[in-house]
Length: 377
Image (cartoon, rainbow, N blue to C red; front, side, top):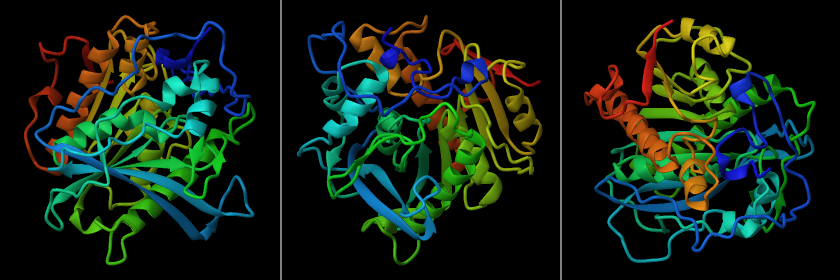
C-alpha cells in the first residue's frame, strides 16, 4: 500500500494510535511499479498573504555538542529560511534535493522524482522586505523521518503575512542533503529508537538554531530583520512535542503549537506562555492520547485544544494537498481544505500572540470552519 502522500503515519510516529511506529527511511530508493503517474508536477498551493516570499538555506554546526546519533561528529543541521520580499522575478526554490526525494520517496512508496520536483512559490536568494528588528520569527520542526520541506506550505504562508520562518532539518532523523554534496539518511529510523531520547535532543537543536539566528553574529546574513522579542515555535508530530519541550526549557520562545504529535519526553514543568494543540480526528480527541491530557494540565496560560474532523496524522502538512493532487488522499477531508485550515489557524495563532491582533477563530467554533472542534477536558 502506498502510504506516502496519504497524510497518515507513513514512516513516522503513529500518533493516532498513541504508539511509536517506524518504517526504515534507509530502504533502497526503488520505485514501485504501481506508483502514481500524475499528469502534471505536484505543487505547493500559493500563499495568501500580501507579500511575495523569498527563501535561503543555512548549514549550521554546533561545535560545542557532539551528535547524539553519530558521536564522532559535531551536531550539524540544515535550516530553510522563508521571509517576505518584494521580488517576484527569479527561480523558485526546489522542494528538496534529488537524493532527499529518492530516500523520502522510497520511505513513502512513491517515485522520488515526484517528491523532489514539487513546485514551490518562494524565490531563491531574494532580498527580505523588512527593516532591522521588525519580523517576528516562527521556528518549525518536522515530523520524525519527514524532511523539513514537508512544512513548506505553512512556512510560505506565514512569510507572505510578514513573518520570518525557519524550518530545522534534524540530522540523521530524516534524509538531509548538505552543501558539500553529502546526503545523510535517517539513521534513527529503527524499531528500537527511544523517542524519549530524541525529543530533548531536538529541543537543544531548536535553542541552538535560535542562538545562531539572533545576536550580532547571526549565521543568516539578513538575521538583523528578526525581532528577537517575538518568537514562536511549533511542529508536526514529534516536532510538535519538541516545540513544547523547548518552550519549557527556553523562555525566549513566546508561543508554541503541536500538530498531532504525541508528547514524548514530556517536561512537566508548567509554563504560562500560549500553546495550541491541533489534533487529527482520532488521535487528537480527549482520551485518545494520555500525553495530551498531561500536557494540557501543565499549561498555565492561554491554551487551545482542537481537533479537525476527517483528517489523519499528516493532513495538515504538505502531504494533505499533495495527496489530493496525486489522487492518493484516503481521508474524508479534502487535502486542499486541510491545508487551508492549517494555514488559517496557525496564522491566526501567531498573529494573536506575536502581534497582539485579535483572531476570533481561536475563541471557539466558527461557522466558516465546521470541521474544527474545541475541547477543554
